[in-house]
Amino acid sequence: MAKIGMIGAGSWGTALSYELASRGHTVTMWSIDRQEVDMINTYHEQKVKLPGVMLPETITASTRLDIAIMGMDLLVLAVPSMFTRKTAASMAPYVRDGQLIVSVAKGLEEDTLLTLTQIIEQEIPQCETAVLCGPTHAEEVGRGLPTAIVAGAGRKKTAEYVQDIFMSDVFRVYTSPDTLGMQLGAAVKNVLALAAGIADGIGYGDNTKAALITRGVSEMSRLGIAAGGKAETFNGLTGIGDLIVTCASMHSRNRRAGILIGQGKTPEEAMQEVQQVVEGVYSAKAAKQLAEKYGVDTPIIDRMYSILFEGCSAKDAVRELMVRDRKKEAESLQWNS
Image 1 (cartoon, rainbow, N blue to C red):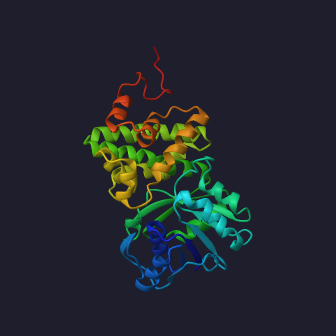
Image 2: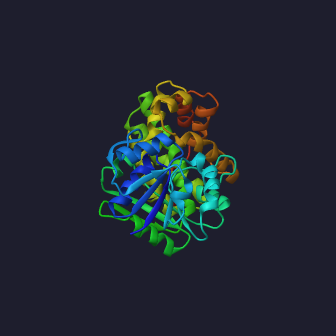
Image 3: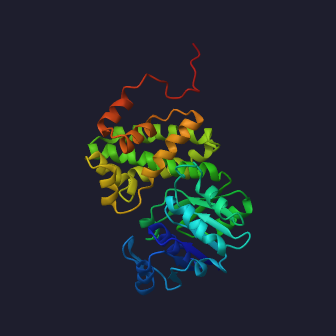
């Protein structure tokens, strides 16, 4: 069994800690918040962000990064994407040469357009990185419901090690070498989930959501492939799979925020009401910049950017999507005559 440092004690970090401890691993969670640490150590529960999930006593928490990092077989970085660089820089002095860090957050850095593993490698050049992502709501993982996810790494041996660490009879882990595509899909799907939530908030129906999801997959794939990801990745768990669950579930903070925006709240009011980090708001800027960099047509992402940052109304954005120039569904398909 492994000793694991969980850097981040939010809902996802807590759910993964529960899953790992249930497999017999020893987990030390880190949080910058003393109240959060005391709550986990005293009550063995993350009462605020994942209430009802009772944590085994093999899980402890600390506000000291050195305790959560030094001597660990594996580190899991589970802070929100916008805090990845700052947290990685603070971790760097304690990370040994070759120590494995698994990134489990979803997003792109706004200014640099870097993935989270690229940020970690910049700040902690002595480490090795891997990715774990897929259609996984913390609320369901914490209840032990059957879940499938993907472990990605540059080396097959590393991906299979992560697979072995996390895999259980309720947590099925696949492997992939396409860490870039995995992370691009994970970031872009959050923007598309906001759009699906907005459609729900306005009161549109199943037809609208099906169109958004399907055309969203096409948009995600075009952008991801142009940026270096593989088509198979966007058709798999970390692409269409993650998009479906994020667009359809009320566990999704992105969808919930989108619903509130569709009902007339500002993006700021929606994020405040959700009371959790809404990654899609931050990823929308990066996704739009990425599309401009590679010259990719991304009408849904463009309209989401307009809603979030340019004051466009949600209904106007949907109308703009509907009245664009006529197009074929798939450019690769050709008529014989």
